[in-house]
Each structure stands twice: as structure tokens, then as C-alpha cells.
Image (cartoon, one colour):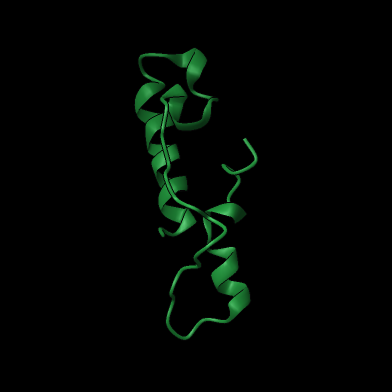
Length: 69
């Protein structure tokens, strides 16, 4: 599992890079590029040392703004 911040940073990077060529796609997730995520997000939580359960669940990709898109 990867922290949701990594996906959000990737989203911002793709949007910035592709906004120079495709301005109409800059509002789409990942700049309109298809990103395939393969994982069973309900089965496994992240391991973050010295964090509470609430912090760990909030760091998951399910808590990201990308999940609702």
C-alpha cells in the first residue's frame, strides 16, 4: 500500500505537465491519463509506526479526494 499523498502528488504533477499541451484536460484526474491501480483496498492497511488507527486509516487512498472521482 502507498500513502494517499503519493497518488495526490502524482495527480498534481500529471496535471501540471499536461496542462501545457492539453489545457482542456487539466481539470481531469491525472491530466486525463489512465492510471490503473491494482490492489484490494479493503484487505490491508498501511503500516505507519507510532501512529493511531485513525491516522493510518486517514492516510489510505480511500480517504483521498481522488477516490470519489
